[in-house]
Image (tube, rainbow, N blue to C red; front, top):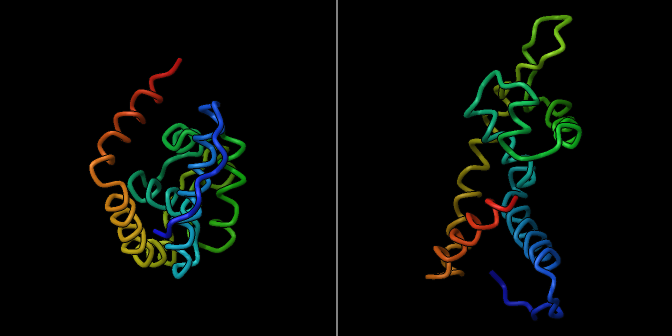
Length: 142
């Protein structure tokens, strides 16, 4: 991970978390570029592979996206043929599955994601566990 100058300090937790989220997303997106997908798409492929046949409501809840945002994010994966909807004709509920092409892309992306994950862990060192503790605390906000 390359060293960059720190952004201007802000007292706002939200602003700082969004900056760091943007930075980490860019890092993972660069790592996944050879597979032709973004980290957001990787996350959706990973979750669909763990929950074959899931609907958009179930998937949105799992990945914590608004359903409308999820539907927009799924569109490129559907149009590229990475995922398929196996719901019966006329059904209003989706049944999402990875296609064979999607399985191949996911298999190509997984070691790239693992390499990015390893790099982040190494960069953070002993602070990695502290970060997970912070994530847990933030996740429990009401």
